[in-house]
Amino acid sequence: MIVGLYRAHSLFFLTGRSDWSYAIQAFLLVIVCALVCVGTYYLNKRLSRARLATKSEGNLYLYEVISVGANSTVQLIKAGERYVLIGVTRDRIVFLTEIPQDEIKHFEPDKGTFDKYFQRFLNKQETNKQETNEEISDEREN
Image 1 (cartoon, rainbow, N blue to C red):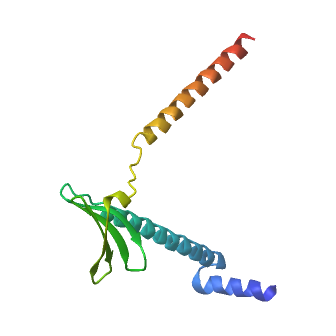
Image 2 (cartoon, rainbow, N blue to C red):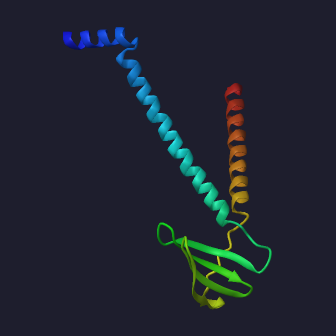
């Protein structure tokens, strides 16, 4: 115990810092590194999603993409009225097959879903507010 106190005391006088300042600096360094990693992850996700979400007003449309390896994807492309499956790597693009239109499962997101849930939430909030006001007025009357 005395050796530990002596060591901490002498370290403080040699460097002007205590053991706690080193611990705090190490903790802050870990926090900063974690924030940088999380920020890089989300930035990468956002940029890759934006790159893949490019839509064309012409005859080509990137319909679906699935990753099959570190640097390779399989992509379903609509070219005019035909659906083409291609393999894409860093170095090349390979035609895999053409898929008949009747075998494609179309997915159309419900565009009104968010509006519907948001309106339901607002109605629920308004109902709760009215019930609370009624309870307060009932308590005041009693």
